[in-house]
Length: 487
Image (cartoon, rainbow, N blue to C red; front, side, top):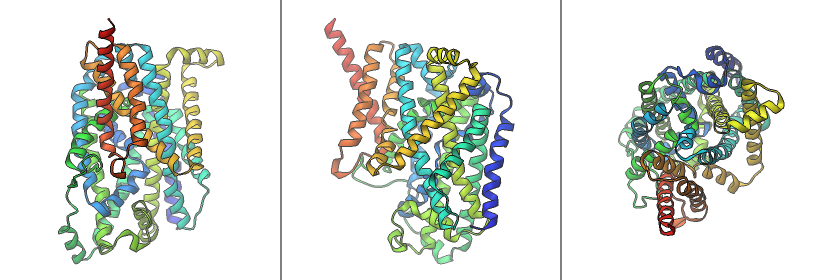
């Protein structure tokens, strides 16, 4: 690794926390710490939403997918935009009129405290599993790239650096620092991706560009008879992707927390729908990098280049082909993606803990002699410790445990979306029906993912949320029918 690359990475890592903290302003209460004062500009929230849902794995995986399948990941963004638009017009007015800071408070108002705490606890458990594996897996390509550039660092050192830097501005600046840092981090890896696109296009021959233009890699969808096994068919991408986006951006505190920090409903809608289009643009840029690499390598299969998986494609390009400075910018971008996801998770888990478990938190704060804001920062620190321990646990586990950690994190989305649909659109729904249905749906979807493999393959991830919603309705309506029979 050159001195220029090291300097870029160090300058970025040292300046970002201070810039984010300076932009966050003063944090004088818990409401500002977890809600951002509800006066953040819509465009910053829009950038933060994109950065939050983009991890290191996203950045390195999409070019590899595009190398083999073209622009299919962009097709998913079509469904994402549809889903976010539905959330913006159906869900957000209810959240803003209800004056909620945690999305699960809406369920509490409708079904009671038990429902609110059950769904919030499910969110916290799933976040630990998802972010633990993201932290571990997101650190691996950074470590591999640094080692390939003759700058090896132990995995635990990289993890502690990422967590330490992220904790600094997250604990001190709260949601405002998280949102502003997300915007900066997104700009870093978008700039790096754009530079890669320009470099690849500049060095491509006319024959390579001609081959790319006349390839079938600009199609947005797959034509496959296995509709439920391939996530990139039109139905899976647009219908499944839309329902998945409704769950992730309409019922997950990780995303909804940012939208609720907007100044008003109009700004919240612009931020949410705009983020869908921005994600599509980011997917297109990363896909073009993969397709340009396909043209540059003269259509060679990955195995012929000594690459075991598609995820190794982009890191190998960063190590072996990028000039000095640009390699450092891309590594900083990979760090940005991990830090952005981590900071968002920490703040959203803190907000869910404090807002959905108010009385236990107040009692504990009084017992240890802390006022509200210091206690909120302590909760953030404790969740950071839990996430590090989860990441270390995955680091010492075998493949199936890692796969389970990645998969189970999405198993609650269908149940959550079903619970919110019952709350918003069914006046007759009762807690004794919805709460057991929620728990049974989470268990059912987890079991389906683990044990049901038609044709020897798992169900496409885009269909898991629709499956969960259907199962939730079946359980909920079934319990209602049983209740009527007993009466």
